[in-house]
Image (cartoon, rainbow, N blue to C red; front, side, top):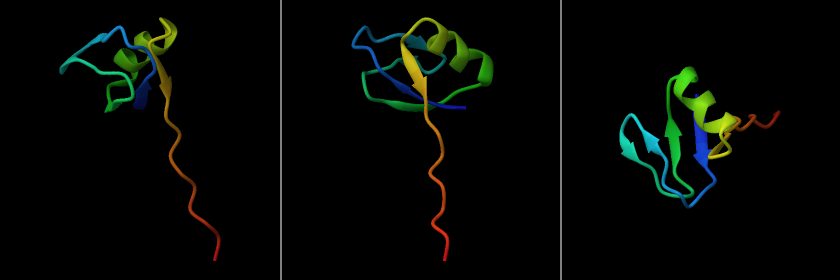
Length: 51
C-alpha cells in the first residue's frame, strides 16, 4: 500500500525514519498503523485518461 508521510515528526518505518512528504510502499498492516496515528495518508493510484 502506498502512503505519503504528512508529519514532520519523522515516524519509524521498517526502512528507518521517514521524512515529511516521502511516498512509501509498505505492507497494509504497517501502512494502516501510520494512517491511524495521523502520520500518513493513503496515496490513490492515478486513473488513466480515457482515449
